[in-house]
Image 1 (tube, one colour):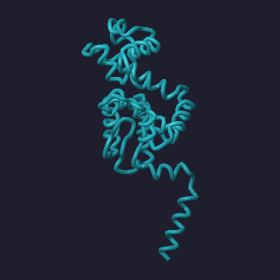
Image 2: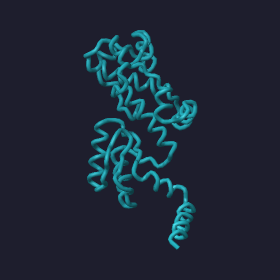
Image 3: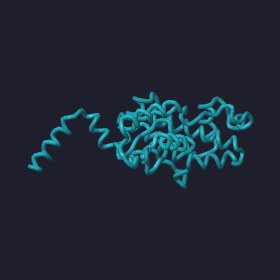
Image 4: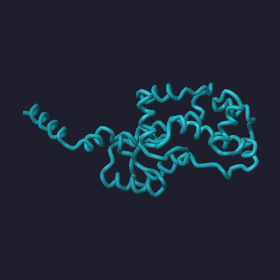
Length: 214
């Protein structure tokens, strides 16, 4: 009798809409758009504590919950995130795009790879267990620019930060960001910003962007 009850329960579960099953399997991990810095993590942490949602870990772009949120908690979380410029992602394509962005930001802005010789096609394929051509096509389709262009934009934004701090030479910055030469960095910097690195250094932080706008 217990066996047939279990079979019946499974049948009822699998005939429910796909989105309900997706929330069931993914209830312990949530993906959040624009959560790209340590201050963002602190903001989300404060929101979770305010709602009363217990979590085991928070990182860039994702939260690991101790339990599945109730409908009321989920609504409060979505609304709270929207108020501070974030978005709770429940679409698998959007989640994958955000993972790509988070990995690029981690490697460029947080110095994950000590030797700075970034091979992002290998990094993304390895970390996300997807073929790079698929990731590249999806990113271009959804974001309207290539992964390569996004990586360049992030590198230039990091270069702006390092130039504004004025603690490293241009050669050191080029090495830090994995450029083959100062000339390569300078050319790419001017192409993206319209300014030379030396001129940008004079005008400081006026032309810098937040990472979610890059």
